Image (cartoon, rainbow, N blue to C red; front, side, top):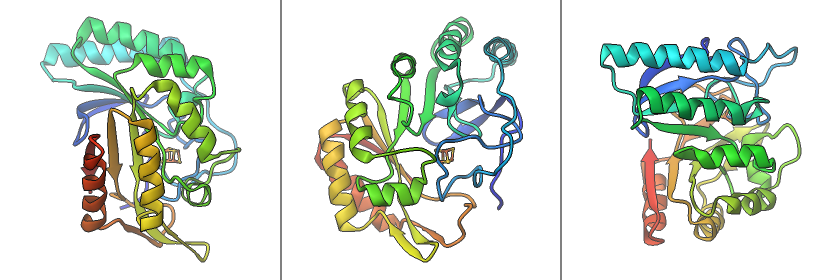
Length: 257
Ligand code: SF4
């Protein structure tokens, strides 16, 4: 299976094990990935050089979502989550806060019980407007792939500056009202072994989980093709051990294998 892009602004609904019947919103270009990470496991593929296509305007997002929700409502199709994901990092969109406000309004009109979910790599939580927007959504799902800088950088390959310490300190703004998402995997990239399932990695990561006490921890492993080819899934045993350790802390955890 190849890596893939979402070619529409609104896609789905698709069934998600974690979010139920999920209607996706892709605020990024439809023909190219646009992200300030370049994760070795990204299902959208690697970042490519060249121009980034244009981003959808706030008004267009609002209208397209309203039209789609209206249709789904009239067809009796359930929507459990309106999910911002797509071809990159949604919070990069310059009108992210406005888009979230519009989405809340439209959701309330057609599917008041649907959750609004944002999958973000947490790189923009240094920006007050982004944080305010993320605090308004039901499922604010923020990524932290390792507690160790060298590993986090090797897995996520941030385009700009990145540090675990800074990210953790900024995550504290949410007062635990967020979902911490971590991809566990192993492999060799550029001749270097990467494995965030080792005891050293998991011990350090658990310390941060305990410090942040998110409302849920979401762990997962590779499910589709990845831009780097020498990667392996974390094993069932690896994930199960992590699950038990998080539960011992009294924190809810979901595991997707
Ligand atoms: S943060 Fe998400 S979209 Fe960006 S490179 Fe990583 S997996 Fe892909």
